[in-house]
Length: 426
Image 1 (tube, helix red, strand yellow):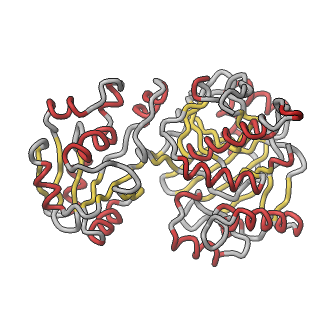
Image 2: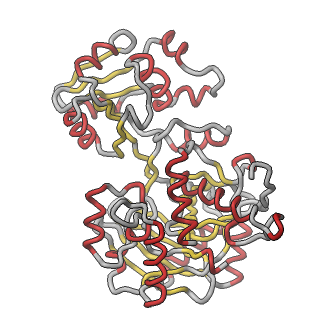
Image 3: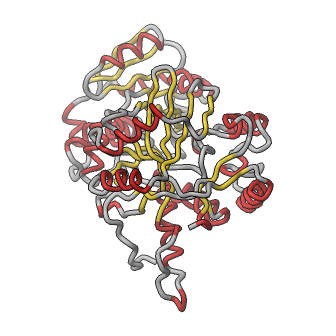
């Protein structure tokens, strides 16, 4: 497969598809967050919320990996009318709105492209385990069950103006209010003239993968499998596997909410973490977590807040000689200045003798108090970070680089279950 020649899309392509949607009274109760943001205890809550919650498809079975079970459930819901297929292919306008939140974009079939083509740009590396998991699910169900999240610099172009006009003037196809206070609305664009406006505006642009790197890698892996399985060992004709389900948002019109992802280092007591950091960082003690977080937010340059539930300690102003020696010389200046790069290359390995990997470091999305609780439970230290800037992420990705693992959490993320895509429909 390594030498397989895959099709090259002519720019950024978002084509219409036959959306598959739930036909239930309360749409909110059958949807869920993206699969990788659902904690174990949340699975039970989602299962209890409705017998047809989409979590039965995206995390199937007691071990969350019963792929054949997901296939049978999907077929059952399609045959019973729980899920229905839109007769006319569409690109869907999607709006998320709530207190302090407004995001609009387009859901469609995005043409798959390698990073080298500069059309769809990843900013994180992927790990083989999650790709293998999603590939097994996608292959078995023959479906894209949740969209990836893409950002593009649209500068309020024709596609964005159409999105806003539709949201302001037309009744939605579906509407649902989820428990987090967000209202989700969906419209279908089927008019050839409107679809042409979208296509023309997007073709010359590129997109950043904001969320869904492993699913995008899965799209590409599935594409390779199908393209290699042509008749008599030849290359297969183009097909639905050359596209993947995606939400595309104009970052200029709807700037995303970029949150931090915190770390917890188990079995590293706070006193020890602070003592070892003093040789290379300036350390300021704060009476409690709230004071420390306020100081972290105001910090300029590399900064980390260490905490375990009592006092908090802010690390700033690393020793420039030690930092320069630790950072890889073959990376760009912008990459070397990212707080997550400094964490992964300097603070964790050089100061504390550990590595930012799944075995050594625990991950906590967004919530510093949750990170502190986890640190207390495991006798370790919470390492709290400020979020990266969108400009930094875009710049690093444009140079073909990847930020360290778990550096970004873009939001608001698309709700899973509002619209699905079957590969069997073309």
